[in-house]
Length: 343
Length: 169
Image (cartoon, rainbow over all chains, first blue to last red; front, side):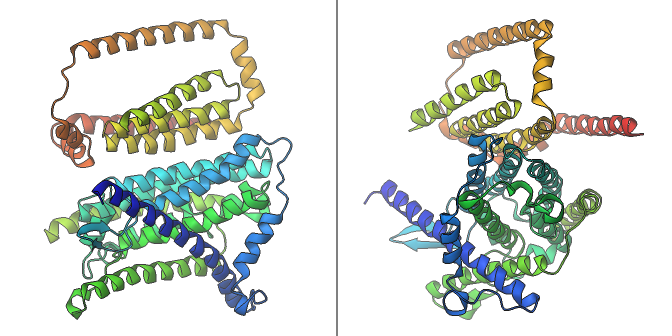
């Protein structure tokens, strides 16, 4: 078998695994969101479909598939149906540059446990998140409804504001890794040299920005139901609504995977090399560590949603520009000084 | 492979840029412009200028066009249409500017195809396009222009804030 064919097959296998992993995680994330919210509010939560309600996600998907797809008369039909797919496209393609394990060697060839190890990895994620704004903006505009439009405009303002503190926090990470490759960023955080430990302020600003970028509470102003009905997806129904729903949860997974990669050491399991396991077990433990960290962060996302009320619009802007932006700048200076000292 | 990709990106770029001009609806025109930027980014990638490709998406498609759309969505398209229809001066100015730009581009293309030396060293062109190489150049050989641009942008930001503040007071 020649090299080219081998790498194409490997890439296809990786795509199938990652896409299915996201889809399954998303459906169970919805289930866990409902269970955790019920737990927070002292309710029972879904428990009718299957054992402990475990088949609930499938019932939800079937329900959404069977619903009528309503498009408003005044809507711009083409853009109205395109917007949910932009959201999905962005949510799925971002996963290409996130490493979920070290390189493994199969049949004498080294295969990194990620889709594409490119040297502009982090910039690629930033580029895709900035494209992601269009899904919401176009959805809001094309519906031809005032509530949708307001939701769309709010979301673009929010995303632009928080992208800045996000970018500056990432710059702090890049000072330590000296590279834009996600793999090298993870490798730079060996042992306990996690960026969350080295630059806690940057960690905080990045997590807050990640919440804002994924439109999760307390930053879900684009879909604030008391003021805007459903925000940008007011006029969406059936599978198009489901696509937005899917994209939101997929974005949550991306958000937590990015936080793990940039700040919590990625797939690094501190001092696992000194335990004396065989290489296969070590790699397994490292991949496991990545997913455990990601799961903990996903729980954190849901936990915050059911604990903290939504911000007002002026509070959102004040936090974005007057608190997060200066904090991320301070963190950049701190990171630069720390890097100088540690050299 | 490269030729096929180039053909795809180039045809998307051409079609979308024509659509930008012909569409009456400003939001659709903006959408086509985004598509155009995206296909340009693809062509940069084919030239192995990864950094410029990504920055093209982040800055043009991501930041600038969002602000454009922000304004466009709050406008009323019917009012815009009448504004353009009643001003023939605008039309002539646009035609003159585009004809001169076209001539300039044709001149540049003719100049490069006949006189530019073909880069024999393919590896070197790949090296130039990476983030590392561009960063090193920016912070060593081009430090002064880089800082000067930063200063200009800062003053523009402060100026914009001052102007908008004056209107509000």
